[in-house]
Length: 96
Image 1 (tube, helix red, strand yellow):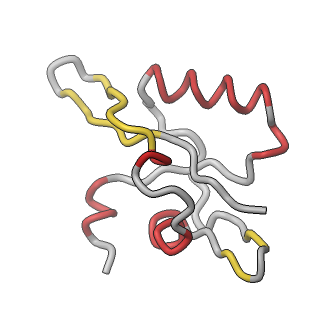
Image 2 (cartoon, rainbow, N blue to C red; image 1 turned 30 degrees about the vertical axis):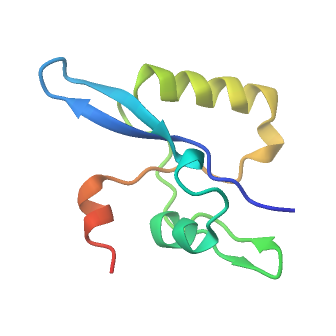
């Protein structure tokens, strides 16, 4: 059984002070476990999925689309979620 990363890359608009969804994460690189581990701490060994290393929950101010997608998905299939977190661009830039 595989692990999927579900979510959005979002862009902040300082004029409207809102986030907008730009592209779904799964469209970037489907089931790239090395990427999942670097960005979110997922550990995948022998088919076992570990916990998210730094669970942060939902961002404090997600885009309307991202929040709506999450609520729809988790309502439909809550057993398929193993964690909820986010990462900022400065953190992504700092990854070795």
